[in-house]
Length: 265
Image (cartoon, rainbow, N blue to C red; front, side, top):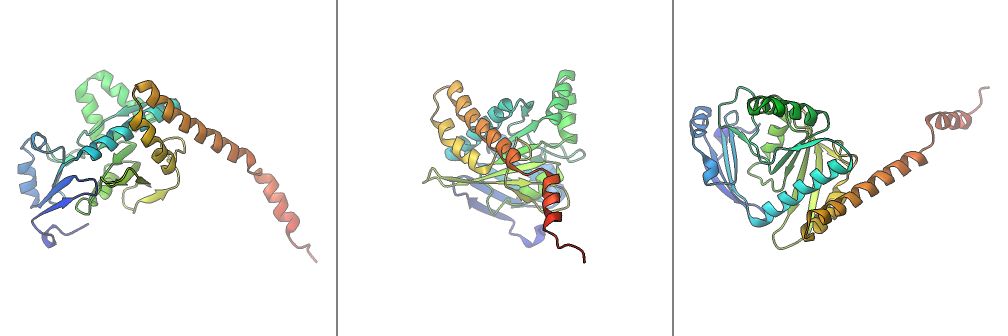
């Protein structure tokens, strides 16, 4: 964890997609007091962390918001294609139970998928207070961040503390349509682990998501977006099944190893 006292009190950063991030450092009591202000009236993304004494305010650029919306569509359509229950939290501010009201971190997109989504659906049926309590106790399965600048890399650690299972970290530049994506498995108390394929969404890979971005962006209707993503998801599922079929059974590999071993005596 970075020492708040060692960092400048206020800095401004511009992300590669043109988003502006203002970062303020203050003592925990000051952060809790500032949380009473409705910062979202002025900034699109807000992170108030009383533990780290950190205030990060972002004004997302159009490319930033465009990619966030596209990735939200990709996750939603992929989960539906895989017949997995999902529930989008969008930019709901995430905080731990007991944190001061108004504090927390806002992702670009957040989702419950599978078992957590089913439990959240039941909480929603009880009413919004039950749903809000569920969010405080249960981190999302998947969080999408389009831009993480040097100013807010601590977000990754924070998401792990909140119980987020997986983070998709997108990187791009305003002057280019090309993007890069890392999938990170998160867990409290340890560093993030880079994933070759999603553990939340049926083995979908970063390359699959990059491939889906452009057709989703250029689609004129929801049906076109759905088919573009579903086609990639179905292909990934077929490829995964083919790999499993091509793998030799465990017992066959064991027999081969024994037959290759030198004879006794």
